[in-house]
Image 1 (cartoon, rainbow, N blue to C red):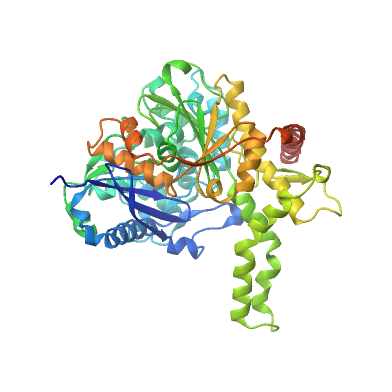
Image 2 (image 1 turned 90 degrees about the vertical axis):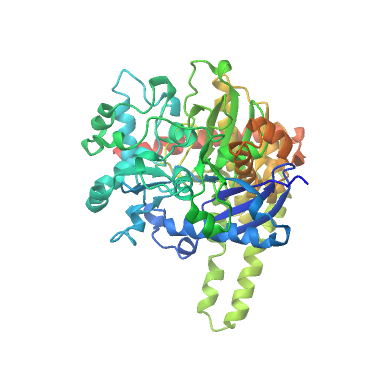
Length: 562
């Protein structure tokens, strides 16, 4: 009797890690588990007031072990473990860490256990704004445009800006740091038992979109480029990489130690990692010229196109275009919004402030206070959405800008801040919530507009992620604003499913990722159709959004240089 073969997809998010076991022959998800980062939940090593967001590698290791063991325990009666053929992972990005010569993150070595600078620098850490500005300024002085494949603007959310910032502010980390490694590259290295940082197989996705690796100039920029930015970077390039790998390739076999630790056979193939949005787009069954929006705390927007269609053109102001970063043989183009779900979460926290004071009152007991807070906070976004949807067009005067965490696309600028105008004594919570929701949808429209203006016509939208699944109000508004249908992926764990698909290809269960998607894809559960009666309103409000955005950006520049 032919044995069923299984693969594991692991999705490292900003707050938690999720693992799923998938039947490689059908795409059926047979087991899932989630682990919330313990240290992250406690707010350790982070300081939101200074935009510092760090994650301890032990949170990642704990999550890896706990979720895989939990998944296997749920299906122990099916004897699944011995038939696992492959594991692939995706992570947030750019989320790099300083490692020693053995490839060990410094936070796992003596003396650095509690040093935030020795930990993974989460994608939304914006402590390196100055360094990003210096990279951009220096790049403009050169004949060769080393930033052309990342949209012409380097971001503080990315690899080199974060590295330079850490080297500048921490002498001990600088002295101990041998190399700099993305989260999506370190986990496969860990699982395969790597002990030499120079042997880490680097993801084409991460290297191309965040670290300036480019086929156009044969790899990373030369050492002279980095030395010109700051002599602290001199010679660092040689400890990084020349070659990159697409995610259909294998990083190696699981090490005996990790096989024993997880209860898996020693012939499990570990695939090359990638960023969550890129694998999520594959799990979401992306098609050429259909923009896949992964909508969570932020958005990452992925589009693929035949390489020959784009040719030598570069799309300005996006987060990069890299051959093979999503689907091998296709050009992967990335954009996104620095805050999406975070915008709604911020507003919920803002208007829920009185609830947080219940702990200090003597009018009700602690148990009642806790229950009351949970009841209201769990329903507040839903209730706001219902009330906002009932507002008339005549009440649509508040206009907001969604840059609460800076702007990722178009034209990355993490120094920017949000704004809100049109307030009156009638501006209540539902009206302001609607303005914020419109702002996030207008931010999405500005990305589609940029692609269209650069000659890359967006033909449709695929929605995945928490907001896409849970907020019909936002999704209908986005369809109305973008004036095109939005298909919502059926899978609850689309990024992990995409990782599982790549694991199946890396393990030679399918010849290509296209074949894996064809068999393992779960399809779409809903389509939001644009309401033509709303188009005129949203077109007018979008023009107001653009005007307010220009004013906000100009005002901030004036304040910076006055």
